[in-house]
Each structure stands twice: as C-alpha cells, then as structure tokens.
Length: 150
Image (cartoon, rainbow, N blue to C red; front, side):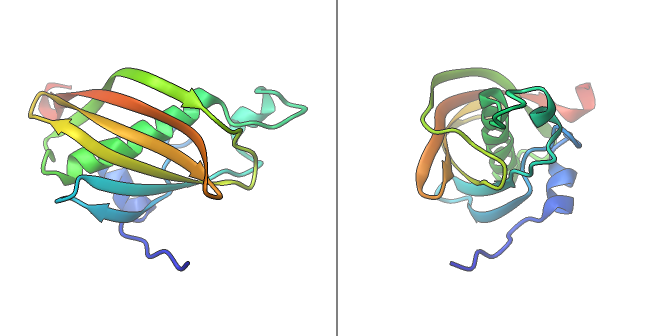
C-alpha cells in the first residue's frame, strides 16, 4: 500500500513544540477532520537515543515513548480541528495496554480518534500498530492552553 504523506515533518514541527529527540511523529498519512481521525507514522531506528540505556542487550522501545507518540499524533488532530492558538498538554492516560514490543526497524502506525473536544480540552482513543499487530492502545486526555499564556 502506497501511503501518501498528508503532513510532512516540517509541517508537523509548525504544529507541535517538540524537537529531536522528543518529536516522535515523522509524518501524517491520513487526516479526516470531519470523522475526527488521524494516522501518524513513527519509523523506529536502531539509532534512537533511548536504545542505549533501555534494555541495551534487547532493544525495545519504551512504552512511555509509544504513548508519547500517540499523544503527539492526537495533538496534531486537535490542532487540525481548528485550535491553532492552543497547545494540547497531556492531562491523563487511562486504559493503557501494551500488547507487543516495538523494535528497531519497526514502523509504528498510530491511529487516533477524537472522542470529545472543547476549547478547554479533549479526549482521544489511540492505537499504535506494527505490521497489523497492536503494540499499544490507550485513552488520552488533554488540556488546551493558549499559546500566548506560555
């Protein structure tokens, strides 16, 4: 399947405040604002800095960073839903489950669906998938903060 890039890395950097090594979304390949859906991609390289200290003899992506990639993808959806003057800050994570490890060379396909969104915050459900297998899933809540108050 040839996946078209909807937002590339430079466009993502205009939306999210994160930068290397904490920018964990490489590109967006699907975005449907009306249906509240987005799909982001994170290609996991053996050169990721976290592999040096997280299970160095068996490289495995930290679960918390998978969740962060899921949250960042959701944050891009929030922005695309019209909240250009706000930044989504992580409020809480619930029902997180880690199903399969993420290893060097894997491509995380991050699906996020907005469940609820207001000018004050929102909630998404997200899944991180590798080769059609769920690596992680969670419900993620955000609080929206005005950019000019930071």
